[in-house]
Image 1 (tube, rainbow, N blue to C red):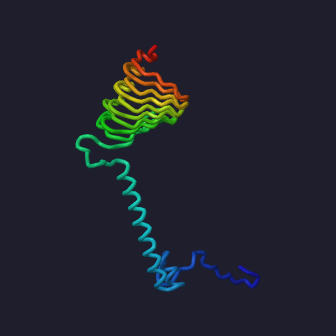
Image 2 (cartoon, one colour; image 1 turned 90 degrees about the vertical axis):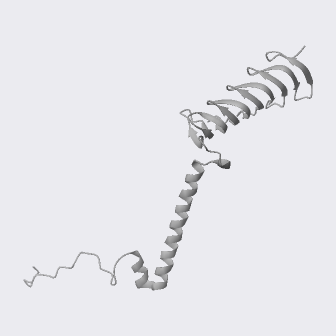
Amino acid sequence: MNKDGQVPEVQDPSPPQIRGGGGFFHLFKNFAGKAVEIYMRKLIGIACIFLLGTLIFAASTYAECPDGKCDDEVYRTDKSEDGAVFRGYSKSSRHGQGTMEWPNGDEYVGEWKNDKMDGFGTMTWANGDLYEGDWQDDIMNGQGTYIWANGDEYTGSWKNGEQDGQGTFTSADGEVVSGVFSNGEMPR
């Protein structure tokens, strides 16, 4: 009650209602007309189509089949506990063409067999060294070229990760040694 003994009018605390219905699009309709409402609906529709397309593209690049060769094997990306990332063919193990990137910057691109580098491939170490050639059970075996970061280079036979057999070593300053290497030792 006020001083005059009358009860004052109570104002309604609820928000005002928009005539012609509520909602986002009706705000524009009431203030700017039907054209803005149509424009906004089209703009949101285009944005939804773009987002849907992005999601579909992302899903297809995660598990794809290059050249359609996916019979029993699946092209996929796997991350191991140590942070290494493998991209390539796999059934239950890495098998076929693939790439492994280690957290320290080392990278192998080439053939895999039973989760091991096996076949032809290229290993690039973070320190700048590079080997391109044959691998067997994660070890350089067969023919290949190793280039050290300092510019030294060996091309020839490898056995159990060592220069072994016919090969040529060329130092960064141009000195060349050719012959039969044994267990990583240069010929005398």
